[in-house]
Image (cartoon, helix red, strand yellow):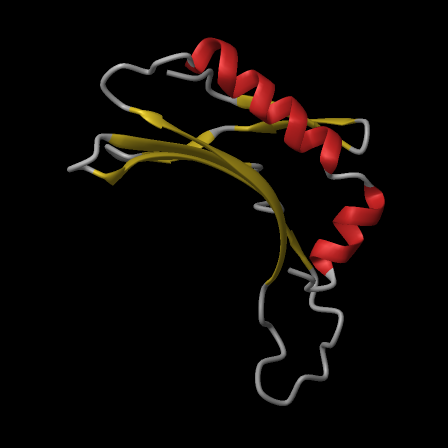
Length: 123
């Protein structure tokens, strides 16, 4: 089990996110002002195949930049970043070696140019 509160640094500011919800497959941590939340989720993608997914996502709730929206002046705007691990739930074969290498390869791929293209909707 992870520490409670969970600590994360955002824009050089240390944030404290106490656990606010927990169930069999997930835990949610949120700052007191609810601006930031962190969700860690565990689930079986395909129980028959034994594939497990573990994901972590950090979300920031921001003020609506269009408060004059006639349809919903208070709609929540969220920016988030997350990643997931997928592996064989029974053997966890080579996860200690392969998963860190996959993570490093993907993080090195996503530079500011690619990030802008992804956010812009390219596929």
